[in-house]
Length: 503
Image (cartoon, rainbow, N blue to C red; front, side):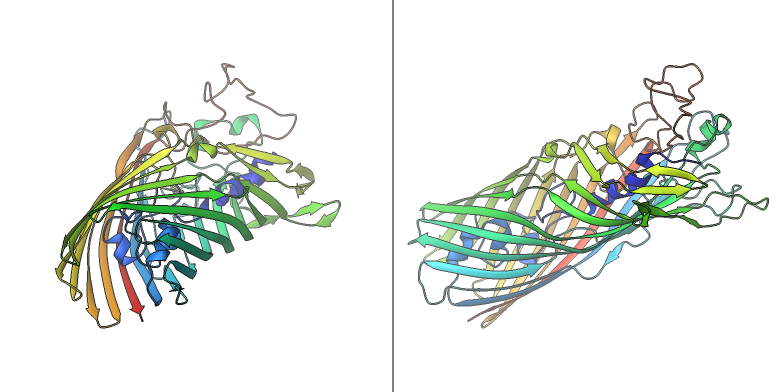
């Protein structure tokens, strides 16, 4: 049997989506970090008065007085649910089991930052290390272990699991002119020490295997797993704020990536289709070589979006004390830049059952679109310098059309709400917040869905060539079975805790 290059590249292409630079927006991310930020549902661009300014608006660091040390962590419970519709032509009594994230609890999502003005009245500086807000690990069932068990692993042809470890190192500086306006910049280094991703593909090896049964489970299914890392991707965030009067403040920031993310990854392919009379599932690895020498490395190129954030804040004061504020933020993310993800194998060859498998250069279309985020948040100083309560609500537009909805990331429209509070003990502030983030359910019909099963065909045996109009094609007008037909749901519970020392 001989695979096409799409079989070898698929896992890498999808895995590349599991990390990016951190923003509180839709697309690859999940919610907002920092109790003082998250408690306002992310409405922080104009306020930006703690160390999370390095991400939302670096100009806010100019508001620092003395030294600030901030430690934060987010505990989250993240559920992703998929109810797949049985494909047309299958047994009328057949139904897929519901699948959902088997690793929903994420206990470690840290942030550590130190800021100071170095005794300079109009300047502020910051050094930060943190993990961007997101789901570090998502795992679904691989599927039943025999041909008689089809109902498990309904999502298996989209994704089985992914895991990523991501760190963001940030060096920031800011300047303000009195209390009228400020400017700032964050220079960021994104480091991905670990990235794993796996999914199941179902190659076509003969004309008799071209049938709708492949949309459920095929005799030649293979598990594709990738492991990789990206040591360095630069990014800059520029920010500013202006305060024309004491009760009104506006903020603006823009995140500008420098080039694409380029990952170095390793590929592993395992045959998991049953080949014995009792239907057992042997896992046999398919070797990969380059120029006759064992190799499994490829590079993945991923375009990054520009992120624009704006905020307008009203401040209600009594004397010198701020009693309460309210802020409305708007952000725009150019996710339409994510059209094609490219894998470059540099001549990688796989060999299975005596056949060579050229990987080549592989492209996968995602067809994402630009999105917007709206956030409205407020702080109320119940007891000045002793107790502050806060809250916020938000909306995030969809990044993908329903036809391209996937289990890898929840890219439908989201609504969210949050509550939080801060208690002050001299130089120490303890802040906590709770937020709930809910994706509006996305329903995809079999005729509408455009995420297709990976079912590559051996070279020279193209049973159903484009444009897929031959009467013998089992899926007229498309290359293989639709695998994202069904209902997608996602929600997250997020608890953040901050410790802030000011001295």
